[in-house]
Length: 229
Image 1 (cartoon, rainbow, N blue to C red):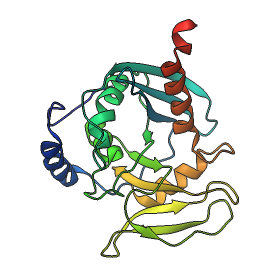
Image 2 (cartoon, one colour):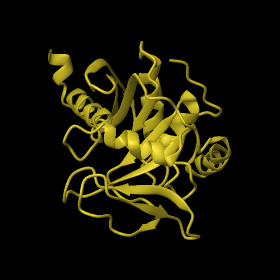
Image 3 (spheres, rainbow, N blue to C red):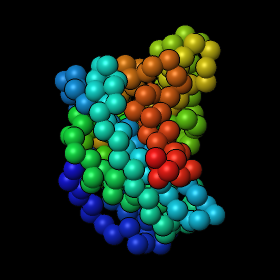
Image 4 (cartoon, one colour):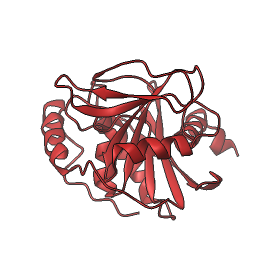
């Protein structure tokens, strides 16, 4: 896959904030795509003792969600842990993994936030702009914003809003009585379709299958299971 980064990753945290402010202007927070044939998921695992990051990208068929391709990439960590700047610690490895992907997914799921970020420039936005693909952020915990509690049934949702009341994402219940996840636009897709596809990519787990599989493969790589096989 082709990657188009508009900046260097070798930056300070202060420079990274300025890049996020530029990134915000490049995000297309809307779009409507036909039903995808291939969906991708991306996630990373960290070995802090070895200062390594293990990035995994999986491609699944849709709507059957059968595994089509997996790519794992590892590299040294080069950016310090800084709240709100996750993409500078994780995205370089994810993008290197995407470079090795042979199939061309129609939409990408990222384990992290998109517009539901203090500068409206989360990792899903960063990866989405660099890939120039419809991208959805699916985060397991709240980073920014306020919301009401959604209903208990699967598919129940409520708006995630910033301090001005602007909608920046959705809080979505993916399983009955299970903690909701936080869905937001990364790039080139509308929020309603992002939520719809997130639910359509569920296989009975809290996390949508693309990012769930990516998480499994990243953790396997971190443990060395893939090398042993």
